[in-house]
Length: 329
Image (cartoon, rainbow, N blue to C red; front, side, top):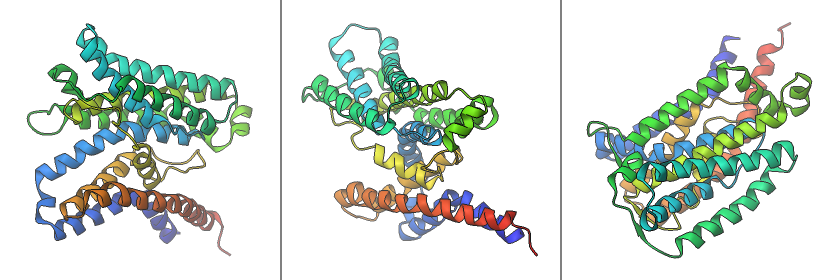
């Protein structure tokens, strides 16, 4: 029994074990990997990805999926740059607009999927096409140069020349949402809906409102991600911003142990998932591997590995639990 518990503990906390192993390997291979600036850079990049991964993780936990989150983030970033360039809106309204856009899109998804009973993959795939096209239409092939420090603050500012504000905000939001999902009735409802819609309905859980909540929250987090990106890239915004970031987000939640079938996983481990992903990318770049290989081929390999990992983690977890629960004769 004790051995099974240790195995289960390792499976549930695999992401943190991978982080330690990765850190040791790259620290041995490159002495600068251990430097404070490198670690802060990894946390900054992880902070950019964390809202997107968290939004995707919440959807998956509830048994849904949103393939358009990166497009929502990109659209939000382009809107911020366009409004700063061409409108006379005050800076604080410009900062709020990406959150409002993300919330509106997520709410629309929630209504169509929850109350309309439509397929989440098809709905968000349609959204992917629409928001991506709208992003490029508004961008118009322009190269925006946002210079207002107040607009850049969320994604570029540091706290006492140390951690980036975006990293601290992302970690804080992740902890807050993790606590909400783990220790409230609404959070229990999210797990229940993801595990079995029929069972959740028999327990009196409002399926429609639960799906509305997770998609609205995911959309808002995507909007926040877009806002972060404006500062992260120094205000040099194009219509390609945040392109393809849904794949690293998927890798992060898969490594975090969020079951793709829904109803199982710890949102807190998503923090480890985004850190692990950025550690791999940073390490390969520092080793002198080409940009194309580090930014495209390695993420592609990680996506494939994550698909296999999601399946095997569920199998290992169920096998260990079955041995734990089966009485010995």
